[in-house]
Length: 408
Length: 102
Image (tube, rainbow over all chains, first blue to last red; front, side, top):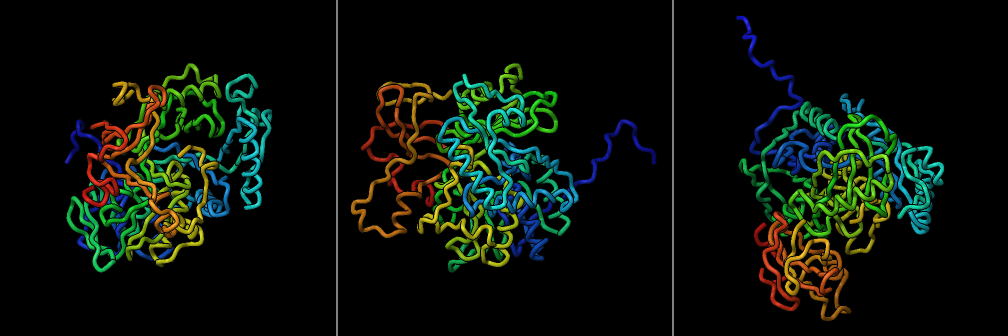
């Protein structure tokens, strides 16, 4: 039989099966973003658990995984944060080989600018803390900043002059979609069901133990349920009467049109709420601070973008003629100490991975690793042991507002 | 830019306002009597519903007065505004919308 010349070509091979839900699984992961997919992958790879469903209410990796600014770094202040973010960064460094999938991880370094004397003191303190934890970090004076990133305006006569910066050379960016697809493809190869268009509408608990979930595609029994739903975690937790110290906010970002390579690194500025890199394709990728109010609308206010662009233009005068192509928002779940919550809940066999706020992408690998360990063994991995729900009662907070780089 | 209906000044642009988070969170009547768990609840735990939410706003660049509003966190639309001290239109101020429906 000859093929009709007018017919469309066959679809290329799918990276994963589009599975339908089975009646029961050992582990149900709620949320098919980066963290959920990584958790599924590491449950199979590290713990031999493959009877898993990943439930996604929309399409795979279409939430914050598709909306972040892809910055990867580990230069946080406290030992607890260094543990999990540096473990993540080490996993990123071998992830392409690990998944046998390109993720375009480019270790182009990150500059965190200091704009006043207090910034300088805080930044140096963070550099020293990083060095004590074996993390590559150095303090750069303004002329050294200009050598790393020549397009940054380091002249002293601007509203927020650059007094120096912390520099982490091993930091960088990756292609967010490829990361999600790489994890999804390998999880699928282990036989894990990735189920899209499947929204969880209820969580069944019996005798203090979770027994399954109700979804728009029917009830699914589960030995364990692991929540990895970022901004919507509070909505899921409320289904079982669990109240969490989370507030969901819109976080906006934007891209310019495609440009020739002009920006060699990643630049972040805490004081003026802007962080900028140039994606492989050529667009400038910029993130803003969160919108002040609670919101689930996946969009934010225009004045936030306006303020962010003003700051970006002062720092990078060369951007003045670039056109804005697109803006969007994701919903980030912020905690009072700007650190995540990863671990058990008061309900048996119900596990939480949330509160990553504005910085979850960089932790996709390490959070997946630690969360998989917690779900598989019932005990936290050393890297997530400090990030319990209990810490808000005990007072053992891990305050990372300074290093989180985006005001919560 | 969203217009916010200040109960005293009328509709003004969002940039004139400051957000104050959840409304109707009373200070403990006898703080010394609280245990750590209860303190944690008061200090760190707030409702986070998707839908109508009673919250505080201040018209910082206008009349500089605080007021309360019910706003839909899914659509960001303001449903009503009312003075501080008036009862919560959503009913009991604690755990609104969270455990009940959502």
